Image 1 (cartoon, one colour):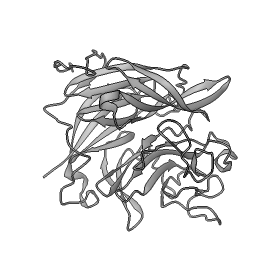
Image 2 (cartoon, helix red, strand yellow):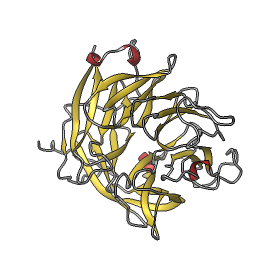
Image 3 (spheres, one colour):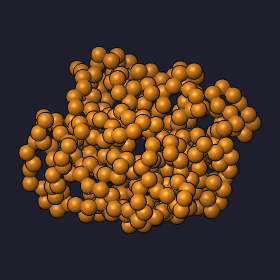
Length: 366
């Protein structure tokens, strides 16, 4: 399927032809604020309430999706960033201070755009690398000049890494601080060790400093006792929710309080222990493998890799209810006006070779 003809762009929006990626747009516009829902809550709609269309295929293991005006920006774990705008496609490799480590689920993972990204090109990125002989991850500042993405500063370094468990989601919160999820690295001590950055939610300033009001003085740690958290989202009241993978089923959605201990690996599921927070919702004997999450209005949407679809949180019953099943591993969701943009990651991190993935739009049926 050919790429649609490119239009002239100025300034930072210079074009770079991208092979192996085909785009279907059909007049679709990304302008507007994050999801203006109609009168029917997502929770009350059935699967038949949505139509789907493919906006992009030929993607290879996309991991994060963000938006700047009418531009959608995707990370691919091999180290590339893809910009899609009105049928134009720009794909380039992030220039980093150390080579990326890309085995398994490691690589170029989360991205967050600075509030002034449209003018400055500033962004924040989470990627995997090797520190000597040890796997590691870091959070860096980066800049896009219209053609090239380049790392400009390391904000958090030497986050313990793993072939599978790296966390990797980053987002700017309503307090204008950067939040970061990190994986437990299959080490049973690190999630409970406040001196380790593994198995945590971290909070830092956009300059890479420790906020004065962090719960542990001088530490990036905001919450701990996490296994492999990959979702971050805030509702309109400022509540922070985190989605994370369980050991064998028992996936979790957690409501985060600063300084709280979420129990891994000591408790999970319905287990309790003094001083540890139980999950807000867990999957019991089922496996969701939740990844990216986002609020559409006041409803929390949860993507599921093993669950192969999109879910919505029923907060009253504390359950996840299906929105739509794609039959594909869904990595993240981005609400845009009344539509939902989904990216897939169809290759398991335990597999080999390329991953045949798509950017899909879900549109609510009238």
